[in-house]
Image 1 (cartoon, one colour):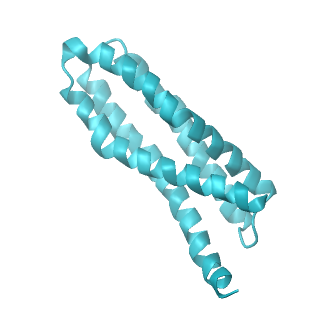
Image 2 (image 1 turned 90 degrees about the vertical axis):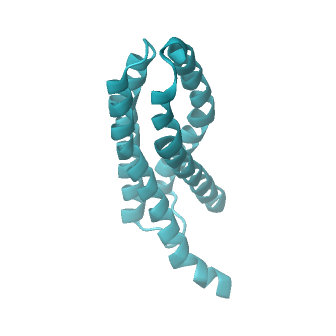
Length: 150
């Protein structure tokens, strides 16, 4: 059970790390290139489709992050577990307080200032998710050599 829980954590976190870097570097900056006449349609489609791609994985990640505090695999320290929780709180609070309000304003129409704010504030999530990935990779690098020898 612990292996499945940790695997859920690993897959969901690295999925989100890859996705957030794509969004930060390629997707959000392209918002500025969408024509004003098409922007509301674009933003509406973006929000719906992004929710379908991101929502389930964020929920799996949240569940497995909290679960690892209580059911950690051998060698996964309380500091690692709680650091993961803290970084996930940063992601969720950033999403709720910084990115969602930008998207709500952008659904009303093209706004270059809001697009720039979206790109700038999204670095908070990008760095927090990257930190979560580094945390899990560090654990694997510490634990796997012993597992491989066994």
